[in-house]
Length: 351
Ligand code: NAD
Ligand code: DAU
Image (cartoon, rainbow, N blue to C red; front, top):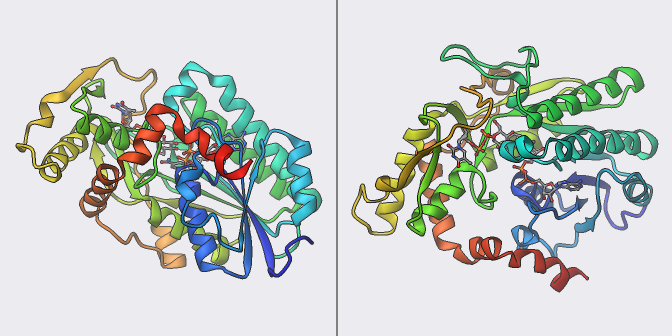
């Protein structure tokens, strides 16, 4: 095993993305005896600037590779004999899945199959294959009810259908080949380092530049928001203490209509930018709705709370204030993305 001084090696796929970079940071800092290998293709969504603070840590390695490429993936598994895999690499944006569904079928379904085969062939004992999934596999709720671990799958976008297919593959490999797996389905994450195509960073960036704020349909769709560091804390807990073969639903219990959230972002950003409160609300523009737009997501996370003692650490309002502050203070990070410069970081620092 090429883990040198380390007790074990774990693989994080998609570690240069939003949630993956928060997870890599946590694992590198909290488990110094574990070698954390970040496999990422650096698609438009991958940004190594997200990991500046840990890139020189002794227990961190980066590998630029494609999860769909069995040769690349197998070579990494042969080299490191990973004990565990945290699988986050994916095409993750619903709007892109509507315009280019096959990219989602390829990465999210085929890529997961390639990783499962490699894990089956080369893994070291003691860990788990952890599939980081989404609540969108359960479909859309009316104004009543919650998703739980036993809710039937009913995906309605190419993105959620591809994630559902991947989840099915993971369960099939558990039942057929007895692979130790675990799956969690999480609600909408927010926080620092999220690619500014997703609702919250997009709106903050547009407010900052006084550009229009595109709200889909009537803005009455509901999402259940979770602070990204609370999600990665749950992943850490589930990987180490969760039961093999089980599923865990993760959610913040923060249901907000999109329009109310956008108004909150406007008023709080106005306050932080010392503008007249209410000025940014004038930028809201109602635009054509997303095709097949799911009405509501809401998670009942009581299994995770009762069995593993997890609970969110910040209120939504508190987390949003910190998130707005981060994007306003890190304009270089945002500008590098909007100008495309962030893709130069790999060339400059790694090749
Ligand atoms: P993201 O789009 O920010 O990051 C995805 C990462 O995967 C990027 O770094 C990208 O370069 C990498 N990647 C894409 N294709 C790849 C390939 N073929 N090979 C290797 N790397 C590849 O995504 P995110 O929002 O951080 O989501 C991470 C995971 O969590 C996804 O699986 C997503 O389905 C799931 N999830 C996200 C949320 C959310 O609110 N963002 C909620 C629940 C679950
Ligand atoms: O529920 C978990 C999912 O949350 C994850 O699996 C996905 O990877 C993640 O992208 C997110 O999906 P959503 O589609 O809910 O997130 P998004 O930020 O794209 O949109 C949030 C809501 O805001 C949704 O109802 C659509 C709406 N919206 C979005 C954008 C980008 C707008 O009204 N205007 C916009 O410009």
